Every structure is written in structure tokens, then in C-alpha cells.
Amino acid sequence: MPFTLLISAGQKLAVTGFLLIAGYTGFKTGTPTTTPLVNNEPKVALNNNSEAIKGIDVSRWQKEVDWSLVREADVKFAFVKATQGDYRLDPFFERNWEESKRHGIKRGAYHFFKPEAPVQGQIDLFISTVNMEPGDLPPVLDIEVSDPKVSAEQLRKSVKTWLEAVSAHYGVKPIIYTSQNYYRRYLLGHFPDYHFWIARYSPVEPEVHHTDSWMFWQYTDRGNISGINSAVDVNFFAGDFETLAQLCLPVSSNPLESPLQQLKHMYPRP
Image (cartoon, rainbow, N blue to C red; front, top):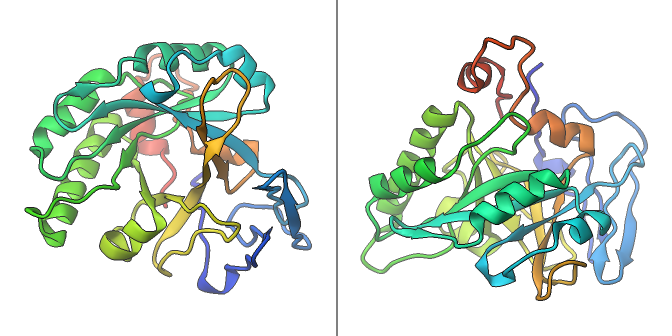
């Protein structure tokens, strides 16, 4: 069934030091709850009293990750950097991609967008690097830097080109990662057909335009996770594990059907 994750303007109920996630389509109804910070992180609770789930994102900066220890630290999903611009591969991508899956962690791959680089080269690099499988999270476009030679309009045009090409290749719409301030300056209200993953290092949840929706919140870039010998980004998904699984690329009930065919008719629209 199609899956929709939306926040309405009237449902932004976070207050300083607390977080409330409520009102998403598909969630069980119930009495909303708020839960205080625990160890300087928001202990996220859904309106059905189940806790939201935690994940990380990694790149070469974390070097060799011990994914068995990461799994024991209650990390349920991980986004792995794959590519940057039109020329750079993350040297730890292949290892992180395979090891995260081997240890039962939901995995996703992301591309670091460079506004000044040719967009077709950025598309080609990502799709030639990342082989997605059923059960993987959608691809992510990490857009967080600007270039004085690239106008905001041209930036958004290139971003749209990347998103549409990657959607066509994998049969699934990517997620847009950005910071709260970058979102406000360049992206607010311009991509209503895509879900956002927002970096906001604050006890207050991300804020988006009423036509937009966010699914992941990067709460800190100074997380301490077993198996990683450096600071790491920590994220929360605005839903439970079942909801996260619904977001992932589906597993076909027809063994003769290709993953691309599955995705084109089963991907949940925003």
C-alpha cells in the first residue's frame, strides 16, 4: 500500500528540551507524549508510545567501522557516503555498504552534491557506483554547499535534474539531506514531491514549509557510538521500524520480476 509521511503546520509540537512526533499518516492513533532529553539526545517518542529509531551516517572520516559493535549500540539504520561531485568515490563506501548489510542494519547511500560540477557527471558517478537491492533505503542527495558562481535558481535546477535522473534509474524517489539554514535559504517550498532529512543540532525538531515533509533528523554531529573511533552524526527516523521498512525498496513476491520493475509500481509516493 502507498505510504505517506507528512507533518502538517499545526503538528509542529516540539518545545525546547522536548520532542513530540505526532500526526504522521499511517501511524497508529493514540495520546501524544513528550519525552525529555536523555544523555543530551532527544528520547523520541511517537504518539503510539513506541520510541522512534536511531541511525548514523558515515564516510571516510569514520575510517574502518566495526559494524558488529554498531549493531549492538542499537543503531537500526545507516546512510553511507558513496560519491562526491563528478569525480570522487568515498574510499570506505564499498566496505561500509557491505558490512552494514551483513550485520543487519538498514543501509542507504548518499551523494555529496557540488553545485559547480557538471550535473550529468554527478548522476553518472552515483549510479555507476551504487548497486541498490530490495530492503535498502532510498538514495540520498546531500546538498549543503553553495558556489558564488551558481545562482539559487540554477542550483535548484541542477538538483532537480539529479533527483529526476536518479529516480528514473532506481525507480524510487531520493531523499534530500540538508541543514536547517540551507533549507530555508535555497530549498524551502521548492521540492514538495521529495522527503527531507534535516540537520538541526538543537533540541527543537526541524521546521519545514507546509508543502514539505521531513523524515529524518540529524540531531548531532558529535555522537559517540561503539565501534566508531571518532565523532559521528546521529539521526532519528520519524517513525517506528515497521514504517522504516515500508520506506525501503520492496522485496518482490514475484521471483521473475526485476528490482526496477518492483520499484516503479510499489514505491510509496510522498
